[in-house]
Amino acid sequence: MRLLFWLKKEILHILPVFLFFFFFFVMINWIESLLFREVGLFSFTLVQITIAAALIAKIVLVADHIPVIRLFREKPLIYGILWKTTLYWTSLFIVRLLIDYVPTLFQDGVEGLKTTSINWNLFIAIQSYYLMLLFIFVTFQDLTDKIGVKKMKELFLGL
Image (tube, rainbow, N blue to C red; front, side):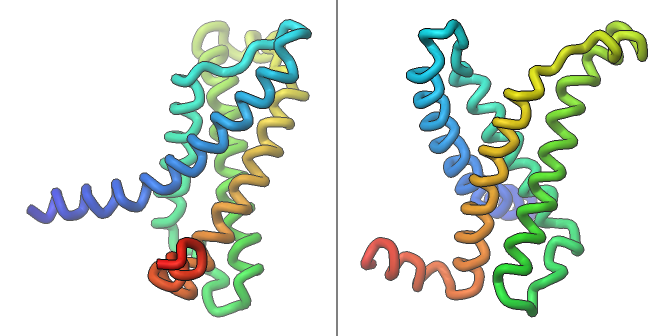
């Protein structure tokens, strides 16, 4: 019974993060496909978008359990927002690098890393999107924590 309660709590914690990033990744992907289709660049698949949104949701879930994430809890919101955004973004940066490099390391060893070519322009562009979205997400998350879910629903939905 406690396991089910814990599982429900974790799913309800991760679901808004997943849905937020999934929605915006679909929007970004749609815009990029309209812009870049003519030059031969193709957009991400729905599976890739889903995996990216799930990856960020998992990073947020894990990071929220680390005590250092609440370092600026008693300070004005901007301190905590910038701190959490930086931690999430740095974690995501490291995970994305590992995703790109670890398969090569296992296949070709250290020598393979020298020939691995990451499209750094695309990598940095995607990291920039992540930074922007993480900042927006953390801002709303911290604001909701500060004033409460009921007040946020009242302010945004008139409920």
